[in-house]
Length: 311
Image (cartoon, rainbow, N blue to C red; front, side, top):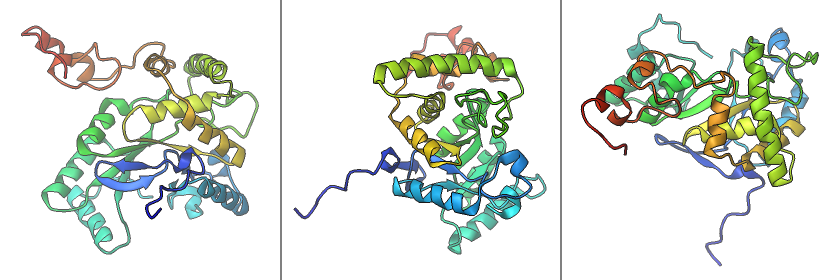
């Protein structure tokens, strides 16, 4: 037969997805975070990996179909990024970035840890002047830190951007042991132990139920990865890892299916109640506690004028 189908994927990592509506790259559903690659004086904060161990991990990731690695020249003092410093105009930045694309040094543009209003203005300037826009936004997101839902989620949906999430596992917060249980190799940015305990309790119960349903070993980390992927159509968790066994466990998370009730339970796990969207979302649409504000039917003041059916 001339037109034979592609060979079966080596793993679920090789079931590629279109990066975003504005970028046709085929990418793996889980990306490797390279912040711990290296052994500089950052090791006390980020952890460390010798070069040989890094190559061993990446070789296995690639053999399973993985094709996306998060790296920045700021990590480990350059052993492994530029920051938005508010001292350069949006016009200059977007023109310079477009020059990098036309010179063939960069294929697509992404932006990280930057306020939504800056990204929106940058994309609009690029669109108005025939320049390349950002196609992916990278920011911290996990059941413990859901602030991206306030503005960034809506921005990405409107501008056709993918979302790449770092810190999905809370820097070790959802391992088999709590991050502050004496294991000094675990590093966490989570300061509120009460919130972490609540989150681990809820997510742990879901993991146990999934294990019983599937007759497999479903971890809390696997449940959180599945949650992050399902949060939006173009949602990609960036997972830092230092062993092949951890990578195998993370790949297994791609087979976990969560119900809407389970998604909501994970959403509310840390806070114990729905997230405060901040002004003006919590004023205009106080009943929208999950997902995004989609239209006038979500606004309380519209409901005082007439009845509008959601679309």
